Amino acid sequence: MKRKLIKFDIIHPPEYLAQKKGEWTDLSTISRKEYTDRLIRLRSNYSDFYTYHLNQTSDWEAEEFFLLDDTFLEKTAQELFGSNHRLIKQWHGRKNAKLRFNPTKWRDYVIDQYIQEVKPDVIFVRSQPMPSRFWQKYRHNTLLVSRLSARLPFNWHPNHWDMIYTDQPDFKTFFELHGVPTIINDQGFDARIITELKIREKKHEVTFVGGLGTQNFSKRTNFIDSIAQQVNFKWWGYWWKYGGDGRSMAEFSALHQTFHGLTSGLEMFQIYKDSKIVMNDYVDTANGIGFNQRMFEVMGCGAFLLTREAPNFKKLFPDNVFTTYSDERDFLDKVAYFLTHEQEREEIAQNAQKFVVEYYDYSKIVKEFNYDLTKALRENKPS
Image (cartoon, rainbow, N blue to C red):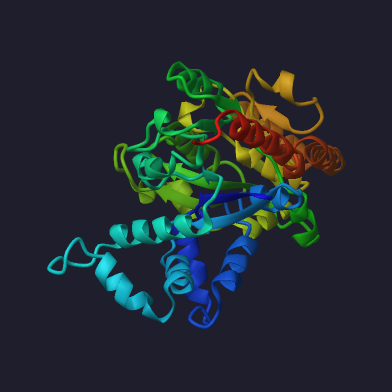
C-alpha cells in the first residue's frame, strides 16, 4: 500500500498570487483539481518539486495543500462538505453563534477535516505561516516534518517536529541540541522548467529577483541600492514590510527607480533566462555561508550567476559554474568584464546548467527525501 504525504506550502510572495487571481476570470467555475494544477503551473516557490517526484515512485501518493489562499481553502471545503459548505463555514468559523466570523478558525477547521479525510502518513510543512503547535494533534499517528531555511518563525518550536530539514548548518546544530533529528537538505532545481522557458535574445543587463527591505535583508538592501546607481540594473520582488527600522522603498532612491514589480515562478525563471548577468546575495542570518535557492534557480535556467563569495563554495561547486564578487568594487569590475565577454559568460552559464541538472535536480533530491521519510516511518512508526 502506498504511503500518503500532504505538503503544506504557499505561493510566494502572497501579493503575487493575488495579482494572478485578479487576472483569472473563471475561478468560480473551475474545480479544486483544476485550480491546484493552475497554482502548480505557476512554478512559484517550490511548486510540486517534491510531490511530483515522490509520485513518480511506487511508494507514495503525495499532494500539495496551499496555505494563505482563500480560493484554495473554499474549493477544499466545497469538496469536503458539498452543497452545505457555506452553512458549515458560518457555524465552524465562529467560536459560538454570537461571535463574528473568524477566518483563522475556519482555515484550521478545513485543514483538520481534510487531514482526517486523507489520513496522511506524513505531514510535510515547508512554509510556516501557522503556529507549529497546530500540528501537534496529528502527531500520534502522523510523522510531522518541517523544513526551515531562513529566520525562525514566530510561534514555531523545533520540538514540535519529528524531523526537520534545513540547508543551514547552524540550524542543524541548534535543532539537534533540542534533540530533534535534523537533515541537511539541498536546495535544487527541477529540470522540467528548462522545457517551459522561451529561448530568445537577452534583454536585461544586470538583474536581481527577491526580497529587500529591512528585516533579514538589511545588508543586501544597502548593497544593491548602491550598485543599482552604477550599472544598468533592474529588480523584481517584494519589499519586506514587517519589523526592522520601518524604512520604505522610496527612501532607497535607486531601488525605487529600478523596481519592476512582483514576480515569481515561471515568470521569474524567464527573467533569469533573459538576463546577461543575475546577481545574488544572501540573507543577513546566513553567517557568511553562500547557499540559497536563487543560486540553483539561476544556474538551472542556464543564466550567468554573479554571487557574493563564500568559504563553502570550494567544497560544493566546481570553479566554472558561476563567478563571485567580494565587495562593491569587485562586483562592478566583474559586471563590466562579463558584459563585454559574451562567449565566456555563456560558457559558464551552460556549465552551470549541466552541473545543476546532474547533481541538484529534484528527481535526485527526492530520492534522498524518500529514503529519509521511509526510514523515519519505519523507526518511529506511530502507535
